[in-house]
Length: 190
Image 1 (tube, rainbow, N blue to C red):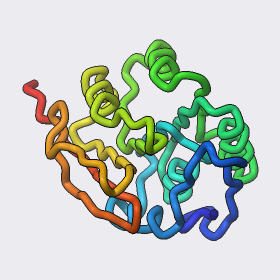
Image 2 (cartoon, rainbow, N blue to C red; image 1 turned 90 degrees about the horizontal axis):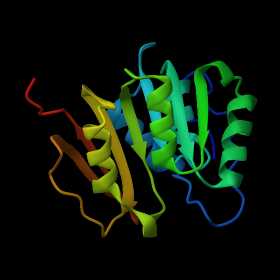
Image 3 (cartoon, rainbow, N blue to C red; image 1 turned 120 degrees about the vertical axis):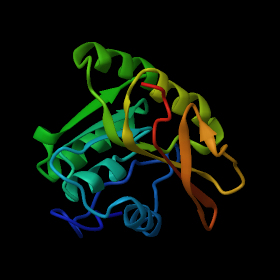
Image 4 (cartoon, helix red, strand yellow; image 1 turned 180 degrees about the horizontal axis):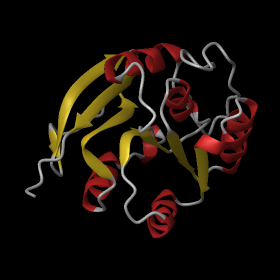
């Protein structure tokens, strides 16, 4: 597993030991970033929710994103994320939040009442997915901007609706056993 492009392109990343996480393959990661980027500006803020090794958030940082928040409850994964961030010297551009992801976001909201994300990666364990619930929470709790993009990774047989809580599906592609769905836009009345 490696960083594909940008400042840290071709640098190796540690994978989470064991079989409790499922890393996004380099091929899928490259395809996702070709669809959403491929590069970001210094104002882009990222949330890597269900972060695993942190590879998606780290890829965004390597491609110019300003700051990334990583949420993960698995202790081995938390250690791996921190090691990957330290190895690449990204400590000043990243924050790792452990424990229950929803509680971690609630604590983050207390610390940063106006924080919004430009880019969100949702890659929960395949058998424990609650993507519609998570997407709805991100909208209802004002974590997203009008232009935010939310990238969902799931099994190819899983389906997501064309609209969730005002977010519209703009991409739905399958790579082998993996499906990637991208949402954007807030259709809220101002």
